Length: 470
Image: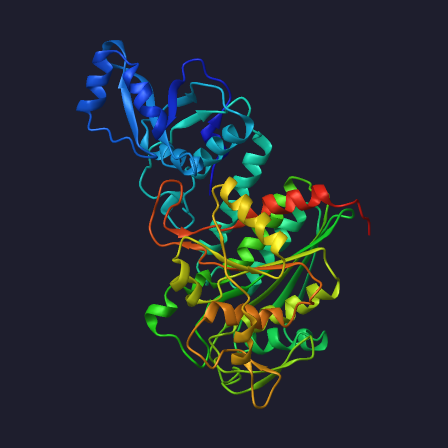
């Protein structure tokens, strides 16, 4: 996980870092003495975002670091430095505005993340110390730390293999989070799901030895109601419509939606936002056994709609539909769900850009704007309702898959929309939750996507909302 130890209090011996945009770099270089310009040229330095050059002083000792930052995504320009710079303490050589200072600090902290749980002695072979940064003076240390902890929580949960992150352990993680922030957490387990009218969650998870469950976390007594729902499929074999080996390999990450809402909840509670938070996570394993649900079964749902199973590998929307129906019953001011739901979203936008859908244009605009400002890009896809006809069933109210091979992400979102009231302000995120390759500050493995964008939108919505109490 990320360590805030790589950000330290003031150190007079810290090496300065000169951080420049590409546009400012040429002017800086022209202003340097000839020997320094020659050094930069001979070092092979390329002035690209994230690129840095070690500048020597008298006697050849390191005197300064030149860094080129991306004006649009400054966070990640700093993300590669903790592991790339020589050991030691560094500081930014000029004052930054609060937002820029916080992003620089956050990028540095996220660059210190590593998942070492299964390495011998925590790290395996002796790893070198990471470079440390003096806290930029105007950075919001609390929010930076809380955000880094939220991202690390998402990454840790997603990176943990299914043998140690089944429905039981996911519920334990939620309980630990609730205890840390004095929230209330209840868990409905096994056949009690049927008694409490969560039949779709039960149907998907009943074949696994680790019983299905619904995790329900509540926190806060004033402000708008914000409810988060996360897909918690801790491993997805595909069920009886079994995935091939290549498709099954990364399915420990199929609880990435659950990890996101727990991480987002962590940030909300740590920052003590004035809102009434509820988090719902249907936690299951989609396994194969004699009692597994079958293709063309007709399932009951909490909302009362019946669903024909067109494919058991489209199980995420089935567990989400019960949770969304429960969430919607309380008429929240905002309802957001996260899910690793469709390969179609990845085909459309690739693995790095999460898709989202919403029934509210103002909410969508707000999320998009904060995605840009936070360097956490997201992209809205349409709830194109003519495609709804593809979910029609001859024997039930709807099918869990479309009868068309096209627009899979849209039809999945349209399926979920059937379980959300038309007056509920809702956004649905279809995410990868995984870095397929390492980039500065973003190692290969589990990743938080859209979390900071949604948090920024929630903060703004709370500021606009009148105070409400339970």
